[in-house]
Image 1: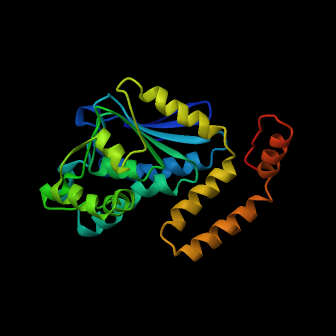
Image 2 (image 1 turned 60 degrees about the vertical axis):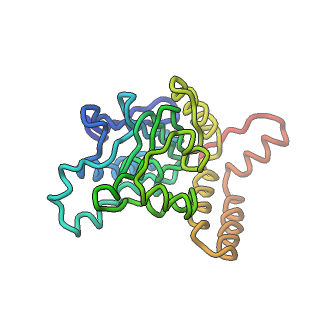
Length: 256
């Protein structure tokens, strides 16, 4: 699965997608972008994987953005469609954690924002520098950042193209958690272990309800929540969770 630049490693219930283009600060080529949907689709269908982690190799960058050398060789129709490839992280029904160490900029930040949880080291830096190049974020960045940090901050962040620190990104809500520079493995590992213990079907359903409900009216979102809750009642995991609680033992979820 994947290539030498995008490789997948498994450890227990977690699968890590490594972006490994270190000489280019893990910038994303068009070919790399096009690999993401297939990788996420395969991991989504693997019952042994409970959580997916996306991480940049080398300790200098999660991904510093897109490969600018390719940009002027692409037609408008190509650019219109390529942004959807990074949405594969959001379409994945399993929890996806972005482990960020170093630069997360442009398309790299857009990929991170398509993940469910973002853990970043304190030395990490974040930016949408597109405006400095006569363009705008085009792979989901404008809308996902807007929904996370609000209009006032989103306009300042994207209209100036300025860099912000991990601490500021955490304060704004752009990242979930900021950890020490040597604490990324431990911080991500703690979240992965916690998520891996949860009921897979409930997690899948909750991710859908949160993502879809955020863009719906309150009445529609509440209806989606009620119907989803009622559906989960038919699952083995629901019965196992309640039974384990009553029997005062840890639950054993199987995703059924």
